[in-house]
Image (cartoon, rainbow, N blue to C red; front, side):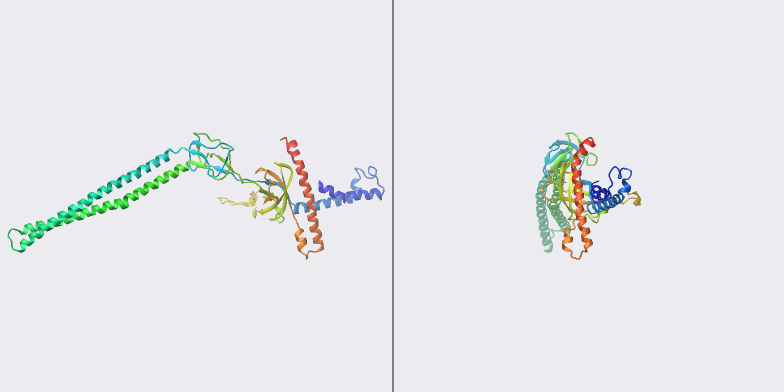
Length: 411
């Protein structure tokens, strides 16, 4: 409507004044409702052509969109396992810091596992003390076996000496018995030494390994106990948190609530422009937004990033081939906007719906490129100038937005 009105000022109005002043035709007599097309046909035709051209230039080089949202991230409050709530530390809508405890699940099973691990450690320590006693007994058995072996060896040496002198007191049978006894005592000594080695192996290898296993079980039990207390992973505000003692929490079916990070969504807006604006909406461009949550305010923005893909074209592997005809929505070019001047969007809540205009600026190109032709320069000046029309339209919509929301929508 604004474009049509402006175009009529340089087309229909001059045509009417020409016919009124120079041709002497009166409005209501010669120019009326039935003859208006015939009398003002040149002005009306030029007005329509100029309006269509102006609209095309404005909407292409200065795109607008009402799909502007300050998306924010939410963190689901979940426990690593299912369990019954034993204690709740925070209330709904309470601000928390990273690491603050939120709630605690029943940890009786994990505490029993920790107690069993402690008992196992104590059992291993007791077995170690017993093994030290067993080693002393095994060492004593070695000493006893060595003494018995020495005694038998002395008896055998004495009998062999007498036998060598030709004494008839020592028989061959006695010597054989002592030799067998000597072998027996040597075997007993080896067995006693093996007993000492076995006890040493228990003390230095087996029991420490058992104790290490028990300590690992203790650490695991303590970790499981710590997991029963759910902490805030980041600073934020707890929302939809209505846990009570005795409630069941399941990480798959029944989360505990939502944590909204404090910095998420502030001072950053995502705007979806039509696909035809893909060659116009670029990083570093300027834009303006107005939001329902902050009426009568126009905030200058800068395009800090443009998503290089269109979300409507994403696919996920499945057992069916994708047919492009099934994609109903064409999708939009996603641009990320931030305020030019810090603090202007601090009071706009994350999640607000806004409207935005992006503007094409050719000022740098006109200043730096001396090879531009005269017609190109005129066209670029026209493109930059007609952006005022879109800026005025955004301000008019900003003024009408509260009226439209509060009166005509019934809210």
